[in-house]
Image 1 (cartoon, one colour):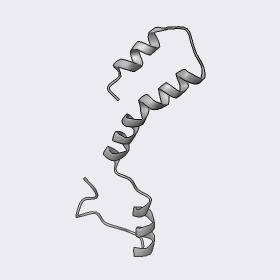
Image 2 (tube, rainbow, N blue to C red; image 1 turned 120 degrees about the vertical axis):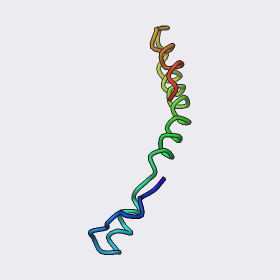
Image 3 (cartoon, helix red, strand yellow; image 1 turned 60 degrees about the vertical axis):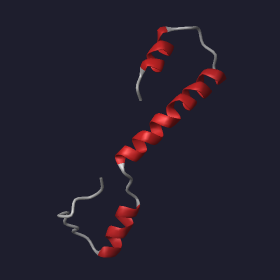
Image 4 (spheres, rainbow, N blue to C red; image 1 turned 180 degrees about the vertical axis):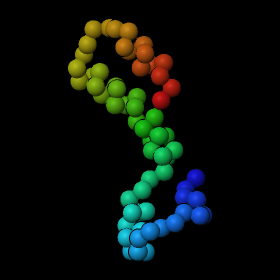
Length: 64
């Protein structure tokens, strides 16, 4: 994970540090989103009760 060793950085070191400091690893964000997803759906369903539908079943079967 991370940047390859052969990566050419076409900007100054200061600019590169700023750019790399704002980057995130995709697998990390994917794991965080997967963890948060059920909590977000629970909040949405609690704040706006809806009729039972097939959507709820689809959300529960979604692996992410």
